[in-house]
Amino acid sequence: MVNGSLMLTIAVLGGTGKEGKGLAYRWAKAGYRVLIGSRSSEKAIKAASEIIQLLEGSSSVVGTTNLEAAQQAEIIVLTVPYAGHRETLEDVKDALKGKLFVDVTVPLVPPKVSKVQMPAAGSAAQEAREILGEDVEVVAAFQNISHELLLDEEEIECDVLVTGTSKKARAEVLTLVEAAGLTGWDAGPIENSVVVEGLTSVLIYINKQYGSTYAGIKITGAQHQ
Amino acid sequence: MVNGSLMLTIAVLGGTGKEGKGLAYRWAKAGYRVLIGSRSSEKAIKAASEIIQLLEGSSSVVGTTNLEAAQQAEIIVLTVPYAGHRETLEDVKDALKGKLFVDVTVPLVPPKVSKVQMPAAGSAAQEAREILGEDVEVVAAFQNISHELLLDEEEIECDVLVTGTSKKARAEVLTLVEAAGLTGWDAGPIENSVVVEGLTSVLIYINKQYGSTYAGIKITGAQHQ
Image (tube, rainbow over all chains, first blue to last red; front, side):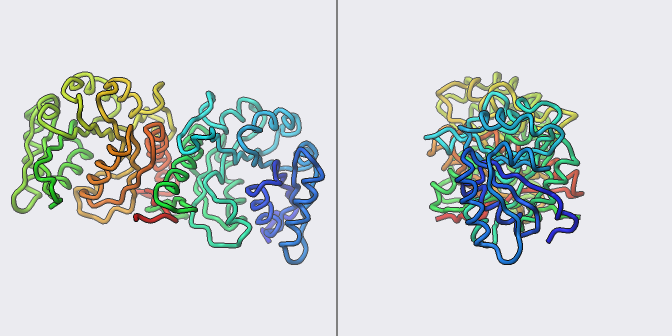
């Protein structure tokens, strides 16, 4: 249970995918109220009940549409494939004003997903910032985590690099990283998100090249104070 | 002594800086013939003699101009600050045809060196490729290593991500990484160099933020076969 976080509601848009479900599970377990959003509220309700079954004891996970989830939450997390990034953001844009938006999107371009190919804005997170405008704090995080592991309770040997539009917003997301049982690092301004998003392609390449499944990164030589 | 590498000559252009000197020292120690290049041959000769003093036993380190060093080497490594990147490449371009070029350059833009700011080509390495053309294999590596440590014989807790224009060229550079006493990873095509160059800004940011000096990264969840 995270201190003082009981009242906070996190919407996980595209939360019916593995990535979203894994994060929703970890945050619900930590005591957050979690809303699973999807284009189809039926799918979202199904995903929410799957997560509740995995959790012991009381927890709050509710499935609904992306828009309703965004409207009812203080923190909105986007975990859709890149193909649905812009459309989903345009759909929920009005509900995000004054809130904290967390982009988990990696702009992979199939079939060459192991080659870094960023959008014109510089990265998916910078594209989100262009779409959402100045009223929304945009933070990018969790792009390098193999989300299958989040549901498995396994020790995850991959740090989370957090970039975003303000230090305060990054600090809030670092709390969410910790609540999910992961180690996070403030990795600087939103312009640095290209490194973290692109790193996913590098890790996919390393997995192919070295026959691994969950290549990740750890920061060395620095410590949390 | 690296097997069969005795005949290979490595030119380290801009080799009078800390980065270049550190790499030159490690490679000379491993048995490579090393040419230190600089705009001033006097400075290069001085740097070469400093390196020879650090080495025990026989070693081959010679100082000369950047152009002469490039002409006489099979592998050319560039370790100048970004401000001198294009000019140095233009100066030595003709001497690089058919050879292997290794770019260590990080396109930092002072004073905001902790913010990723890539050149129009996408990265310094991709800019090098544009300048040098198709006749030269371009590999980017060593951008995240604190080069002071190379001269100090300290254990370096930072892996080297190697990106480049061909798998064969990356494999050759991975041999140089190992010869320098470091752990390297084939990190894919030259387009992925943006991640590794940009990671330097992220590590600088982490150093500032967490009070560390030598933040680095380690790849987890994968193994060399």
